[in-house]
Length: 110
Image (cartoon, rainbow, N blue to C red):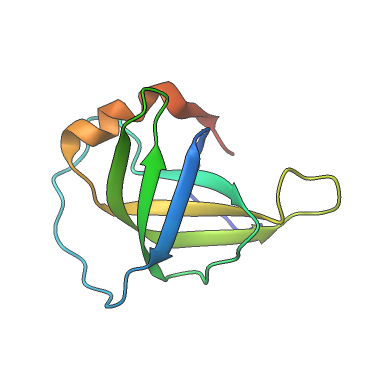
């Protein structure tokens, strides 16, 4: 693993697709306690640096739709919950949606 910012583990189902062009828009700074990214387990390995559209399905039956960039991808061994551990940096997310993620976030991954 490389040196990277720790992200909280997302404990929710996620659907992601490639976002196409790598356009980065300026996002307002998140609140100090709001995550600027998350890490997920997946059996599909997106490439590092690739922008994605993701939908995160919340416990209350709603979802958060946002854009992320793949920060890192770690292959996991046998017996792991998935084939890859992936860090995703938010590049476009509504400020109130960051707060909505709180119930499905675990501790920061180090």
